[in-house]
Image 1 (spheres, helix red, strand yellow):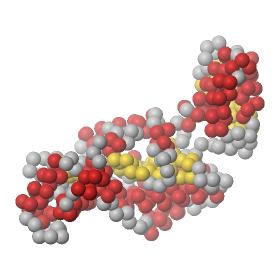
Image 2: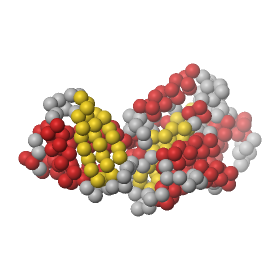
Image 3: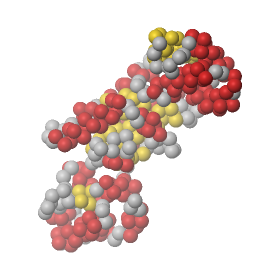
Image 4: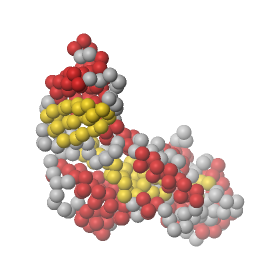
Length: 354
């Protein structure tokens, strides 16, 4: 992988300026930037031929590309990454943008999902991209767990939390499960679960099932593992990701290839196969992170960028994330402070609601 920091340090002042102006021009217009355009904006007076030579050098380094013969240049993914890491100037949050985000969270209700839905809609409206909001898992202490047989191949897992919240999941149990094995599995879990959150219980159960194998029969052990998986794996994938502003990614003149990439992106999001990856992207420290094109395993085929930030609860624990998807020519300097502010606001709102 190219060391963009080293490349940047080795470049001459002229090369850096040409590179910066090409990227800024591309981010502003979406069009290739030509040498004649740059002769009018460069700090020093240089000829178009000199600029073309610099552009060719930058292309050789893999920082610029030429979409058409004799056309101007656009930044490559590597070039965009170097620009974001070394040259991006992040602006202050616009007061109008701040007001719209603030307004979305002003309703004094206790429905966190509805709150985050409004925030997502405001975020997509302000940025003109698609917004992603990953809602928190329900992390109250557990009061009771129960398994109910619905049919030979269907069972219901019921979990009751100490705050009165109840969640149900239908799943396919291992063949041969009986009412007694379901009761044994529930008893085993309840003996350990009370007062713990799902996350705490999941971590504990992996150790307990291994160390106490003799205390629970094979069928009940399978039921315990399958029941927990409903919440810790599949269970978190369906209702936790809020996507708003899909239409913003489809421009009036989008060609068929662009439309196909965007369809692929939203197919991925609808299936939510990689929702755990979305939160994982943010778990290496607080603050905004930028993923350009194929750097992002969520939608590497879409030609899109993701600007994402985690949000935290009152205990400074990461519980969700907010982000904006757009074309790789996003106005990163404007989007970054919007996402950062929204993440901080969401964390505060959730902390205020307990």
